[in-house]
Length: 155
Image 1 (cartoon, helix red, strand yellow):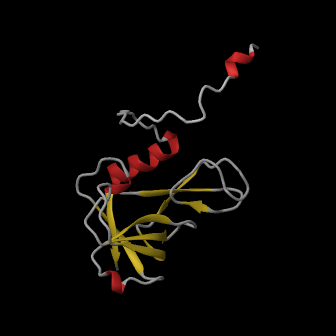
Image 2: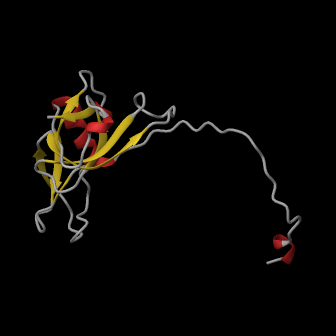
């Protein structure tokens, strides 16, 4: 190869400022498609269970994180569970799905071994605690995404 292909012209990098708009569509794959379709059409929360380890994952995934087996056994889990941990957001961002303060938590639903990250509503941040019982509140008009669950509320 000719050496001039690798010649450094300047040590200062060229910086160009601007914005690029990239419209795109994201395919979630067959497992998440089934999860979101059941959530949208039937208000059902489906996990996926490893037939070797017995772990039920929610949200579902293709491979067991413990034994690396392919996961194919669908399991309906209850829309109720226990709060494992949480945080409260007080600052506004245009990507937030609701007005602040927003309580985000990891909820371990009955019948699942892993937690689902979602918002907690109908309560004051000062009243939220680890171990509290929560239930899903579904939107009336669902679109096939995780926000079809409006939030989880205390039972």
